[in-house]
Structure formats: structure tokens, C-alpha cells
Image (cartoon, rainbow, N blue to C red; front, side, top):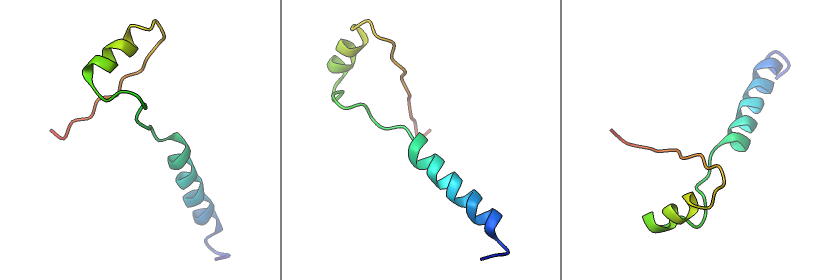
Length: 53
């Protein structure tokens, strides 16, 4: 453990960054109509799309 302290700290740092910086789905958007309603509120919104193709 003493020889690999830099590697251990790097691994812990990357793990914490992944946990705190990952994106989460927005609650309340279950349909296209609810998305359309949220887009018309006038507040800035960031959309992230995912595709398996």
C-alpha cells in the first residue's frame, strides 16, 4: 500500500468525480407532453440524448 499511494489516491479521486458529476434523469418528464410543458416555462434547459446506434 505504501508503494502505490499515488495510484490509490488517483483511483479514489476518479471514483468520487464519477459519483458527483454523473447526470441524472429529471423527475417529472414521463411523456412528450410533459417535456413540451417544461420547455415552455422560459427557463434554460439542457437536453441530453442517448442512442444505442
